[in-house]
Image 1 (cartoon, rainbow, N blue to C red):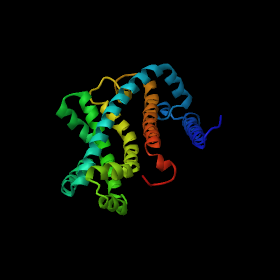
Image 2 (cartoon, one colour):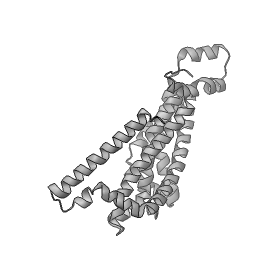
Image 3 (spheres, one colour):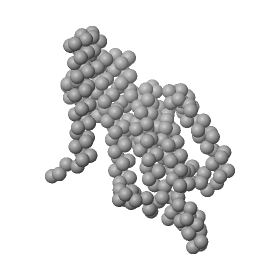
Length: 261
């Protein structure tokens, strides 16, 4: 069985990361003899040992966060796609809505989270809304940009052939903008995980974010902190890879090196 170049790169990157982490941890522990080394940067072998001990509970909490991430991501992506189409159909809507969308994105997520929780008074709804909020903007802007980038000659050709708006969008503009859409989704997927983890801290009693906060400040098992942090990073990477895999099958002309629909 042949190993792909991407597989080799992933193995090399992971190995390099582990080696550098362990080297830095050894330096703190045994060279600098920092008494707080275990909290600042534990040995990677200790993290692996802790994950082996708490792995089942961490995976269960990761599944909770993943569920809210998926719900919020799908809702935000759907809203972004819908608004992008509406803005493309109507310049008035675009000029009216876009400044408000940009202004909304200037609100720090740390400041937005308590506001959302105060409005909904429900942790579950707040998790989904916050994740959707993070997802919405990159998807809407990239999808709109894709539809605006469609070849003018092709648009004029379809209009000359008597194509109506439905045919123009379904057969040209939307297929043409799919690479842009997936770019926006790949950008927002890891951010959606981060937003969902942040939302876990809003009076929630489960999720990776809850484990991280509880391990730090709530008297929980300290050994769960770093495994939970690394698991959160892996979740973001997995979401990115899932979107990339969907793109691979949904946009076959891109992997063949072309831009034609």
